[in-house]
Length: 305
Image (cartoon, rainbow, N blue to C red):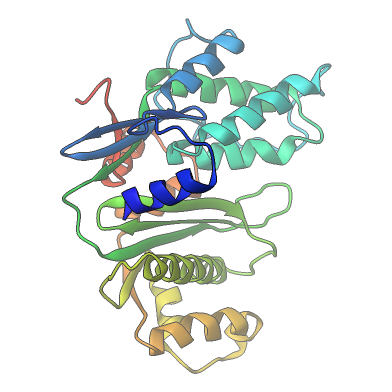
């Protein structure tokens, strides 16, 4: 089928077959019998060199777990272009680095008025990147074709707006295929509400991924499991009775429950320490971060241990 497509394209356009993909737009692709590894090592090293951080001391985590930066933290930068350039490059690096998604999402909120504390947080992230510039995604060849997802929320995480942060990731077997860290559009009045809104966003993503797999002719087993560490949010999805506390989130309730009743979705509880989506909602300490990364199929070919 691939040869037929190539032949058809060559009949219409002037093309040159460069063989197996190894490098494209900063993405480095390594293939073996175990699977495909994608990273941005060269791009990461060039980023460190550009900002004078090649010789910096590495950090074990991308963001301080105790310090919460706000929009007015520190003094305004005399050259805000430097900060905006750094964040823009970090956004592209997060294409293969889900471990930095939360930090980049947080830093990108201060683009209009960057301050010294924001730039320091950006440099700390560079020190974390220095610890493993070749870290990337490993898609194993022996994985099962089963779609699943993890969803989490950090209630009122934003100190400026008190909006919660949603995080979710989807897996095809053991391979991470999509992920997102994003601040919710409205303020949630309880932690359960924020968790349920995150569950609705993850459900929407799973529906989109399942449709894409069907377009590609990939058969997967239903129901799709969605892991959440909030028993109350799972109870709302299973309970058709809406009382006063859930009237304001009724649309999300109907959306998730509709797909639960159709047999597409199966929400399951997972312990908070094993919640992989934690990495997209809050800064984590080094040991906990590395433990979750190992479960996500994140690998470093230059340091397999």
